[in-house]
Length: 433
Image (cartoon, rainbow, N blue to C red; front, side, top):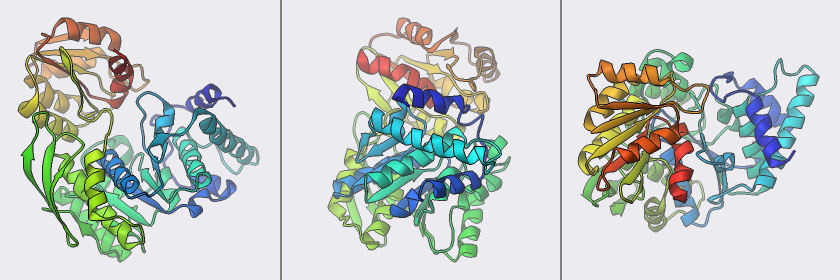
């Protein structure tokens, strides 16, 4: 297949969330048929509700600063699907991507024809297999895998990572993971298996109780990041200098490459993972940890594009993410402030609206070009339910951008949020302009 054919094939399998089938059997059988590429690569798996992507890119940045050849697998992508598979910080080439997807497709269809599978592996299962193939072929030193959804039955868990981390857990994807934070925590904590090293970020007490019980059952001593970080100072655009104190080292006045005070928690998790890797034979020093934290970048997460007006893009897609964004807007946003908002229909829109919309001078609601997108009518109901009336609607993200620019003074800020899919539609246009 060509690159475009490979992309078309993957999306023909159905939306990665709507068409997902949680379970490890397909991934395990598929990886075995492909020669078990995950067995030739040591890996770290990161699960959680918020911060797992940021933690993954910080760890990747630290490792590359230390001269460790990394493979980074994340989701979703913003502009190109190749962004999901990074080799030493660079997206896999389109030709290589097409080659790996072709190999995965051929093996999947063969197994399906033999009735090994009742149905073809899903989009995410085949993407994960392609990523692990690319990592094995590239002979990387370490794979860093961001869990797609949950943990217990997520395709990345089939990679059998030796080191795992759990970032803060909150309510999200309830229709798949459970209706209580304890149920969701149980799904994510299941990646803690006998023999692994586990780093646990600060948690809701209810989630923590579940996680620690899983650690006890697996006979794993957790490394907790509680009260590791203390902010020292902040830049004008919301980057923080933070001091971290671990059991191993004191890291004084480390400037975070990612904006927002909440990133100090993700940095603490990345630092603890780095120390575990160092003990496992990877040459990671305190200097490279400092360098990697400072140089980490994560597009679409409090990403600022200066201009007149300026743009801020943040993929806050649940109430916990919205609270972190609201904190940043309260402290650092220029005025007047316009919010362009689009979200998936399975999200807690009323809560997110109540957190974000009151701080804006203008809210522009839009639908996203995605099967899961909430309608502008449902978004408008959420705005009404929280008593916000300074709202306009748009039928597309392009129209929303035009209305936002027209309604915002050149001295102000336009914040694009609610979903990474919305940012994926608008970011290429903003970066190009």
